[in-house]
Image (cartoon, rainbow, N blue to C red; front, side, top):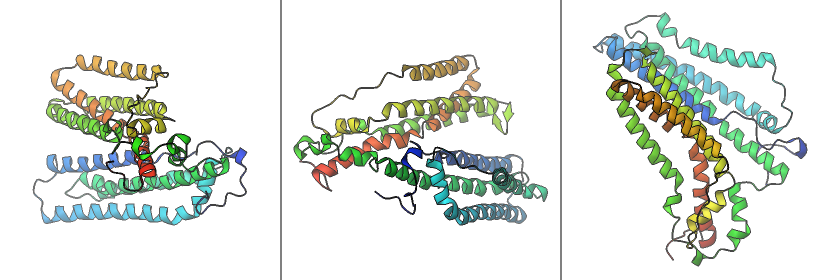
Length: 358
């Protein structure tokens, strides 16, 4: 197995980390959420405080604000695409070495300055006042938020190449799936031992989507039903909504970490349970019981606080809690996809490229 576009012959395997030291691409979701918030803020201002009739001047100003934001976002993406190829190999190699390469203070300050200037320029529509008011800044910020999210999402390339470098130098298989397909358990399988398709009780990605859809639909409807009765606002949103949204998000992120720890190294076992005719029971890992204790404690504390609120505030807080938790478990998809994808890979490996009913 070779690493794409990277020369790793001079690297010492003993000096390579077990995991890459890189920011997670999931940070892109923060800026996606920020883009949605800015868009909501612009629409709320235009409908509640701004002019109620879309005159020609208003339409032209809104179009100019959006165009200004697109120009800023395109500038950021263009600069990133121009600089990324030059720093790609250095970023990947630096992320896998145990001794982190030093990043100068000037480089750090320049990076901070770029973001400060970029978001500072989104306030130009406020400096040049027009009939669209504060909605102009929010409309200009939306393309910038999306551009930052796109750049952060591109970090997946760095993660893939970093893992290739680590596995190449440590002599490990290219991926968990390749290692599992080459295991004695899979090589001993024959088509008559497999089901026509994997058991859907192990389709964890689909189950997670259903759970998230339920949480978001119930949470958003609950928020909408109690929104107008809450006068205490913070950035245009009820303060209770911010508090319980953050609370639910923390519970969801903790649950993601806890669940990913339980699944680590269990992909092959789960995949075999899903594809074998002989029903196997998957043994749940309970050794990190304290992870469940933290989740139950946080949920219990939230429910206790909800019980102290009046009905309208309870609807807002409960809805925000459900939405926050639904968003917090989003990173679980990548962990749940692996065993389900491995189950199909085993069936293709044993039955051929088009596995079907026997």
